[in-house]
Length: 394
Image 1 (cartoon, rainbow, N blue to C red):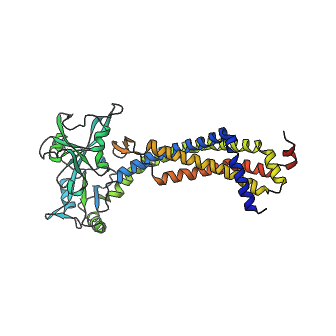
Image 2: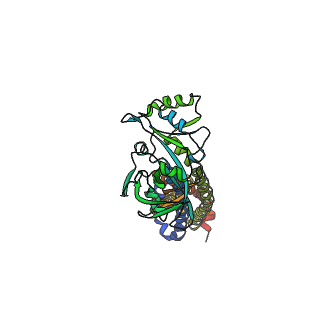
Image 3: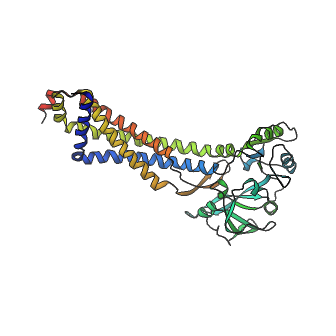
């Protein structure tokens, strides 16, 4: 008989006998599904955090900090620094004025809706140029704050995650009261986790006279190197210049690496358990069908075809488990909203878990690996089983 026909016949035989082993087969499937669901669920945290950090980033927007600073919290810029930045070449202009937004960044305490515990929420002091640098910012509820007043607007994600952020609420930070008058959408970016106020009101409330960052809109992304070189070569200032996309990607790196490391460690340990489960399932299947396998070999079926048919069954169960786990993780986790610490600024960032197709495919590949390892040794045993001994069994 042709080898491929042998293999097809054996695979068909294995599949037809699966209902008689539904208990052990289901255990293998759900063991793999559990591993995949945990892997995808944990990794989706890092993906969601990374996505929100770079969602609104643009290659033609530049973040300017003090030289040596790794975040806005550790940066201080004087008024002279800001003027030098505003006069650098390559900046986009509106009505003849450079689109450069000097900003103040402070942390305020707001309770989380889920736990009631206080969390550090970013509060940003801005000028009118901030809305030119970030054209994605749109008021979706209430109104824009009035310049020169104690009115503030909150990001949509901040409103979902933190209490006392409804329009009309009065907030007291220090000795100053602030009235929430609007909610803004920031295209899913990190700005949505913030509270915005007029810089001219926020700065004296916190006894600040300096800025912490300047957000700059370039005439085009190709002007970045010209803009950067003009400032880094200027002896009057010591500045750090990064594209907005690069800056926020770096901000998300620490948490993403931590989450990925945790996910792989947990999934490795769970994967070992799933492999042993698959081994047990396939060894049981081979032992239960020892006489049938021996009979087939006596009729001329090759050991190689027998071995591959057993591996195919293990892979099939693993793929089913992988699909169940990946789809289950997508339904359970994708879009789930929460907030966590940005370790660069020690502030809360609201984000949603992001179960991407890439994560699901990678997890299914891991499931296939589990099935391959779990089915290999039982397959070798089936191929090497002495025919005479198997026929005498029972």
